[in-house]
Image (cartoon, rainbow, N blue to C red):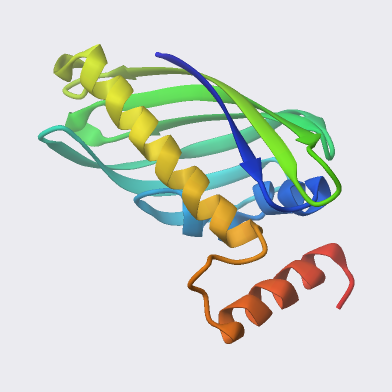
Length: 171
């Protein structure tokens, strides 16, 4: 499966870059993610529970960052096993570009492969699920990194501001 897309995020590129490299931010935004632990600057262990059509599986695996050109791009690669449900492996080239002083355009190119019971569901269902999960991730990520969701209360907004100030070393 191959997929490309782009997402405008209402935050400066440096803030988006830091969030893309923060395990806690990613864990909160990745649909079905139950654990994401950074084991080094370029490696993480992950666990997620996902449903693809009638098949629900818990995956565990490893994630690696490579071809890092901070704060512009990297390649994120991963592979995971879902036991009898099968396996998934893939990579995504992620590129960030300024889109004005307070916005970033994130573009991605994904290549993925699945096997086992999940692969038997067919490419169309897998592609639809992948697009849905990407959409959910980017909505959550934009809400987490952007100024704030329209319905966020003042306390939530202040927590986000404090979190990103600490990330940027401005606290």
